[in-house]
Image (tube, rainbow, N blue to C red; front, side):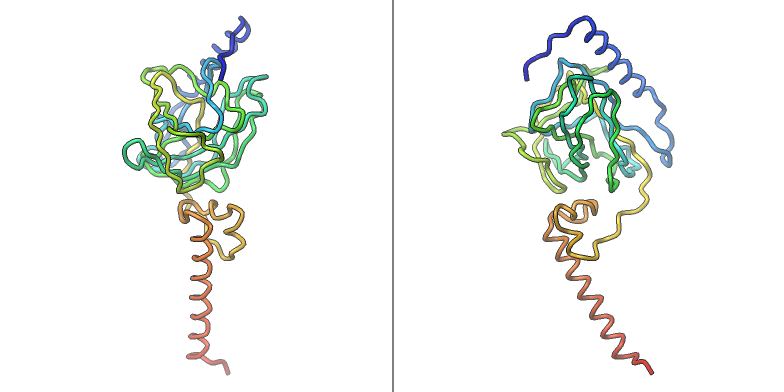
Length: 249
């Protein structure tokens, strides 16, 4: 991505973005039962993200108590971020530079209006040590990070070729390209875990990506469908067995 030359107005806007990010960083963390902000918004037009890539930040870590991600936020720049797309990710360390995707948002389009928050539904159950990240869409994402304060930063990126589509739950990636000079322009709201979503009761719920809505229970559509078939068979067998031993009348 070509660097953006900043005029005086843009430089003032950049300083404002950094200040807003610092305000969010100074917010109290709160108790384990209260909602908490992980990460920090605030971007710099000199630090963009390339298209079709996965980024994470090793400083944006879920605390040991865990919980559930209910929304994520990005601080966009008017006339620069409008129309750009991203998918929020929760990444779990899997040894070395490898991370496994344990939760995703829908594909979201930035409006370029400043502070933007997107709900995550269903909520993503997370555990201590998980980190925040995102997948950048076809146009890349401008102002997706900023100079880290304090240093070092925690930005990491996938190695190898482009990631042509958002990675799903269970997808493993190598995020070995480190940039310790910056942190991502991203934060997430962490709330208490209210219990995992109820399991699927029909094959239809598993199709067209529906299996992803059941947390980390399934790694693909086939696992979800097999779960429904198995439990439907057990339920049907139990009903027949119960009726045989307890006839009516």
